[in-house]
Length: 396
Image (tube, rainbow, N blue to C red; front, side):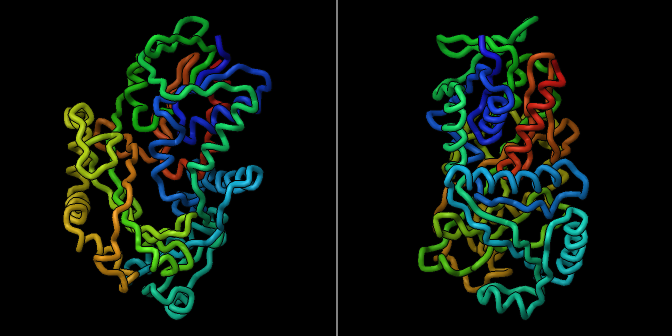
């Protein structure tokens, strides 16, 4: 019998296990991960950005958690000798409409108490000679890190605090009884007084496995990246982001400096045909059937049909993808777009077709399922873990 069981070895599950062990010294905890290593899915396939939180509505949970998370992530890296770089980010406007949106973002940043600097067209050219735009916002506190390294450090911390981590352990059964939760895997069983499920791309299936009456499904959105050749590693000094269209669910293609010194461009956002299939032609019949038979999926596709068609076109036609990049980096050409591993985002969708952009939990007396932990979950993982801990205790 364990005091706590955490299912999921991504950054949210690891941060949750770490916080529980720190809060309740001496408690017994086991973390179960179906892969052979930690952080193999969303955590290990993201852009590595430590976000400042400029995009989110003032006073929202996402804005608060992102601000706290950025500070907590940097502090954790310093404490554990993990290399990170507070390089800053430029949000570049390339049209009059984007300039208007940029001003709205500037006002939002003030309300979110994030330090942001306006940059004129001339100043932008001085700061970034290879970038073109009518103006920009500079967010100095944005940074970059390897979240895979963060996961490894969290894993070491969990073990040092007495927690147990079991890899290559796929959960096949979850049953809540009066005084515990029974968790089953192939040939093994565990009991825990409290269970936390941070299943990411499999979160809805784990909730159903536990008998919870959920009304959403996870739809995988595939984010395709390209890596620039090493000769262009110095093409930008900062991270270069477009000013987002508030009507669209994703931020758009951007240039990202990585902690290893390379530069990526991306991602786009297209429907994935496998929840965990990162190669380009990956296809999983069960994954496709899951969302194809879910009415909310088709409502989402219809509501976003214009942007969906554009994203699909750019996925299939490389010059279209390049066109998005060249809006603010005109010196790029097709030969610069080298292959890079894709990422897959677990997007929770309601029956009415609405994309769930906020946190979504399903909770019983002894279980808490994190059904949706929206971007930027990696940046916000440590305060998210504290919120999960508090909700878990409230359910006692």
